[in-house]
Image (cartoon, rainbow, N blue to C red; front, side, top):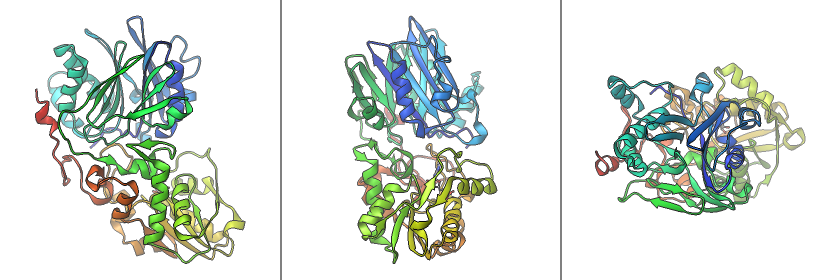
Length: 470
Ligand code: AMP
């Protein structure tokens, strides 16, 4: 599959007053979901105005760039993607002027039948101005609006054509909608602020805005928010669920609650279960900051080993994960992490990280700990071995990228230079998230895809196609 990946963040708001500053604030709070570009679309006086630029929220959306942007309805987006798709052309929200009004869409997720749909509609004379799969959502929605003029029906028709992961905020003139795909891959929640209602990828945004969390959008649900109320259009049939486990393991903020489970709590439980499944004979336990922190704390509680901070992280170094070659990634890891020598010298250390993908980070960190005088280094990992690509929005694409595809656990232990290495089991992870296994997407660790992906096995067949077939 081509097309950029979207582990992004979305916001939507409807209020009696201008919503632009609120959306800006919410985007800042979900900045971790995407650092490549940011955008806001707002409706006033019959027009949707969109401002979007490359960079962090405060760089992309400045007072100057947002001059003239205002409205009582608006949506926003932060975008994460691989380096090669950098550029403002794929920034969101995507907005369209149509005969039935202005439309804007912000998308978090990945449309898995994007290439098929693109081919089909190119043959019908459509043109695409970006290489983003989100554009197909905007174009389909717009086509459907011209047929029904009813946004709910038009969204349902769009949902019956697309497969994959999508949490959306959508605007049709002043009306604001939230949509979550029937599997519920990516999060989306509803909150109330003093001024109106807000939809946002993660609940942490509500706390910082003095808002009240109302609930998660249900898988398959469409919700319309208005300044003083909201209206729900739930899915009328039972549909299998597939919440992405990686949201809890790595992607979301620890202070967010996703589908009723607090991320921090899940990570701590992961650490406690790891300590039960794979104890280590050691003196201290320390995290890979920041993503491994709650996991390490859980390991400390579960094992009784003292928790210590053994690395100081430089937060201003670029994201190492997306750098294009191995040398650059390794160099960036050493720039990013410096050991706290008194913590590690002459000690048997357990180091806990959320996940191993290529093995770059831990290989480098184990070496740094040994150079700083650690006597033994035991690695514990809060996610089972990643062996299969994600087609639903997490930036893990090709099988040959995953160290666990080519090597056994003991070989990986030797490659990263650790004294011992253990991953949490799939059962342990499911226990920590505390959902039935069938309600989770575990495809990256068990290769069982919830939906049809050409060339991959799949677990469920969506019932939505027949429910909403046009
Ligand atoms: P690696 O160094 O390739 O083994 O990658 C694992 C490290 O990258 C872990 O410390 C994770 O916190 C982080 N990580 C895992 N998956 C992703 C992702 N999709 N995007 C960015 N960082 C990630």
